[in-house]
Length: 509
Image 1 (cartoon, helix red, strand yellow):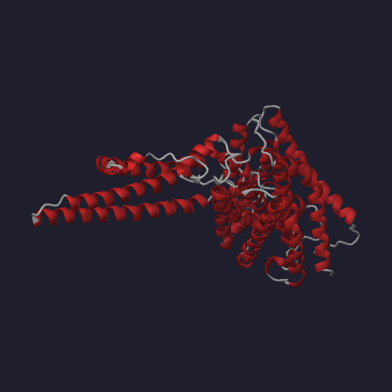
Image 2 (cartoon, rainbow, N blue to C red; image 1 turned 180 degrees about the vertical axis):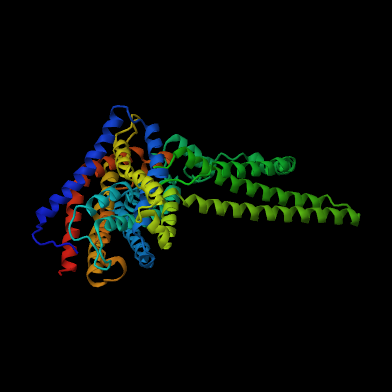
């Protein structure tokens, strides 16, 4: 490892300050671009999509494929365990803060979501790559001739794996539950969300007056059955068109910048498919009932009707299985994204040693063309991430009405994300590094990454989720402003400096 003799706390803090300030200056350029109108919301989405689909995959590939080895991949099992522990402690931190502040169910879900879903992309990636080339004592003794390039690559790999788990959890549990109105309290809900939840039947009957027509109980069932028979063919066609539209428009989403319109299309299409399948199943049941009632005493006619009904039910059953399989495949594909594809390709290249050497080390044709091009494209990623981050922090022209517990929710979210989990996680990480020196736990850059992820601000992506669900948008904007603009600099300096001293304590030699 690098020598740390002569590095006092103030010196290390100064090195961290330089790295954090570099990140802040680049982010401020994005803030300025948004403030002057040079980078409006539509342009921010385009830049972010280009970064996620092109520049970031190139960065990941150039870093990982060049330095990754299969011998170290098996040791990455620590990261899912760390992710699970972090999520669990952050969840209880959000619950504790919500109980202390006496928040209702929706407000509790909001604070809990912000506590769980930290930024694992833009800020930690930028800081990790900057610190890898700045701080002392980050090379790993387990790797012969380790250098700062390898340190940066490993830090990026740890973050990427953690990021993929976080992304899947955000767009499942977060989008569908924690950061969505529950319908238990209508006081703070926008009217559009009240209407939507009423149509979906998610608002309880005691909160809204009954809107059911009593005439539905007096003879309308037969009409409904007839209507279902008439429209059975059109329903099947609608199912097919929904499947096709879902397939045509479904694209993988990114970590920090998903397109809200695209996500809405995907979510709506998937929901409609399930609803249409249910309708089709009901039609099958109605047809079966009608066939039995209309059967004549003629046994031949009855057997023919029964046989047709069985064929129809079998066909419907096979359709449901087929659509369920297609839906499952599309759901799996939705979790795949360009950075994840890039990581998979990097592992393949690293596994084929001659290809790895030809692409990055031998100085031949492949290295001078494809390898050099991918490396240069990857170098654009970090500045682009920070520019988009700064532009996202700039307040939107649309004003959102704060709720009565606005300040409580902001304070609870920030403490639940950046303060309370660290009181439990940092000692656990410290003890693990000191006494469980196995796998990647004794890799110095893993310690830095672990500390950064523990205190990272809420993910920028939560802005898109709250916008899609119209869920406490004013509170989300305030949280991002306070956590990124005010707290990032002092918290990063304290945490990273502490990580270096923990590293010296765990490895005194």
